Structures are given as structure tokens and as C-alpha cells.
Amino acid sequence: MKAWVAREKDEFRSTVVFAETAGKAKSIAFGTECLEDVPFCRIQVRRVPEMDKYYEDGKTEMEWNNPQDRIVLVKECGFYCEYIEMSECENCQAKEFCSEWEEMEE
Image (cartoon, rainbow, N blue to C red; front, side, top):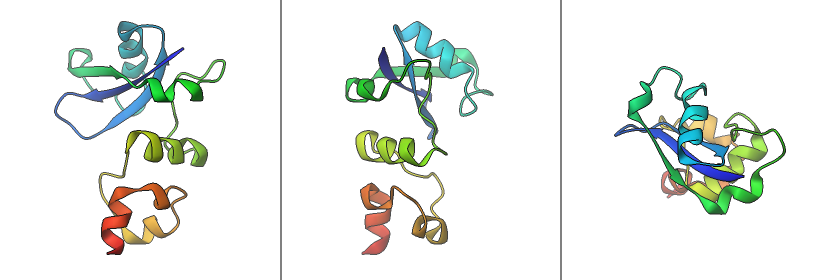
């Protein structure tokens, strides 16, 4: 199964989904909480082969609220929170890999 970053064109929010083709990835992304209110034609996908190894049978999306998935998303894909709150960052499992956290620490 192939991994794809799906996002709304020209917007911040994005997710990683697993699908065989770009078209199927776009369809899966359209059904995610992250992109559920985005018009289908505004969803873009691009391959992220380095994320293929995180696919598990039946898994369609990396979950930001799952601590293990969040660490992978931050470490492998450079994801970070759109609105940075130091109090939330203190308890984030992925802070040691987060470029935004590093900048705030300096």
C-alpha cells in the first residue's frame, strides 16, 4: 500500500492516507475528519514513499491524535501544529522532533 500526503490546495491542514493510486488516495482523504468539509476538487495528494512502511492491514490514515502516529508524522513528514501553544507543546509526544518546538525553545 502506498502513502500519500493529502491537503487542501493552498491551505495548512493535511493528513497522510494509504491507497494504491492517487485517485483512491484523494477519495479516502475526502472522507477524513481533516478534509471532510473541503470540496473534492480542492484536495491534492502527493506520494510520500518513506511513509509506506507504516501501513498496517486495514489502516487508511495516520491519526494525528494517536501518539505513535503523531511522532511519525512530525519526524518523517515535518508536520506540526497550526497554532502553537507552549503549554500544549510541553506535553506533546513529538516535541523532540518538531521544528516549531525547536524554534520556540531558542
